[in-house]
Image (tube, rainbow, N blue to C red; front, side, top):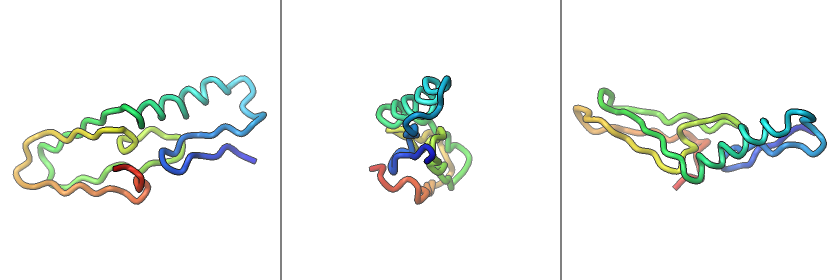
Length: 93
């Protein structure tokens, strides 16, 4: 059996008995850092020059601006900005 990932934040769940010698870095990078970002992270997204933007998808065990607890859009666009949220970000409210 292989590592699995949580359904909401896509955090790695290390399979028991695997990752000998690399367990610490795997958990720190692919779990704890991503949890930290999901619980209290901030993504700054500059929208000064564009009127459309698509948030990055949440991918298993990979950093993403969409995982952050807070998104801060800044800039002075010429008109309203349309933000598209990917289907992988279904549980963020």
